[in-house]
Amino acid sequence: MVCRVEAYGTPCFTGLYINNGVNGDGGGFVLVANGNGNGWLRVSLNGNGFRVYSVVATIPFIVWIPALGAYFTIIGLLLWRGVGLGTKQVLQEPRVISLGLLLALSVNTLLVGAVYVDQATPRYSVPGISIDWSFDLETSTVTAKLNLGGMYTLLNATCKYLPPGATGGFNNNNNNNRASWAIETQVVNTTTVVAIIPRSAYEEYFNSRVLEPVPPIPAYLSVYEAMLIHCEFRLDKGVFRASYVATFYWRDLSVHVNGSRVVIYNPNPVSINTTLHIVDLESRGVVYSGALSIEALSREEVDLANYGPSVYRVVVQYILLGLARSRVVEVAVP
Image (cartoon, rainbow, N blue to C red; front, side):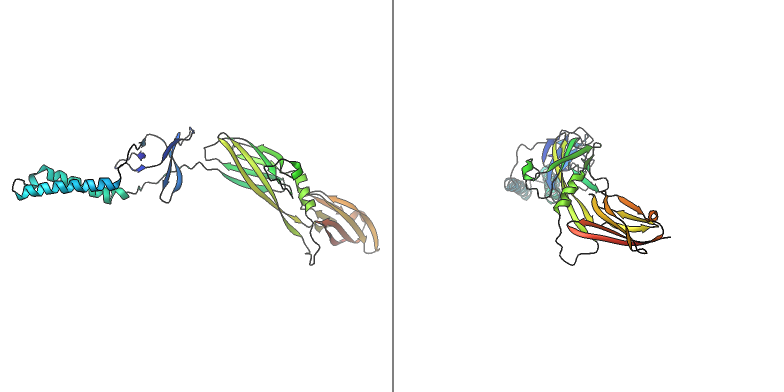
């Protein structure tokens, strides 16, 4: 039992008094208590404002309540008999006054003290761990910001990703079972960990996704993808494991005109091989036809001014998730 020392009372809490091994603002001990509406809580005990008591024995209420009632009854009968015989004066009898005080105290304890509710604002220190995850496709990084609550110290971390079609899960390191594969993990500071997803991981997912060419095929593709990342954080008091789903989309190439230039942008985290055709609509001849690779999350520009004044049609053809795709623009070069 732990009692908080106050000016007008000492509210007490029952629970398990343990040493959490932390030398910080919360002190080295906590009270693990289960209160009404509180669930299991760990209350930090700091300073000299608390006194700790151990319960060594208890008296069941079915014993002490009848005993207390019998005591009041016997004393009352003795006093009543004395008053009736004229040998006792009620207001001059010390036992009457003490009995009245004891009775009032007992009633107060039963009706008020037993249901006393501490109105002071509780201050709980719950040694939980939470993580704020984020994913940046441009830098191909997953960032984990840990909230350790001042209870733990981050020592190291390792992260893995689950490739498509994996059957071994994160606890299986057998490559024959397509188990999870480790990726580069950096501990930036005492609360931040960054995992770098390699481009080869995106290529695995890209090559495993083949869409059925079932009509109607949308003019612009946007296909959801999810990559499961699992991290293991080594702390000074144990190991904490957590998983995160990095999501992104496979999208069509973006082709637009900027003056005499045709800009081709690849929004995907893998390179896309295209075939580029440039047709002169005035002479009706093909001025260029060849392969063009667009790197991941990058753009390529084709300057039609190099072919002289005319009106050109530019056709970009490529394969995305097993589907043949094309983009067509026309440009007038003065």
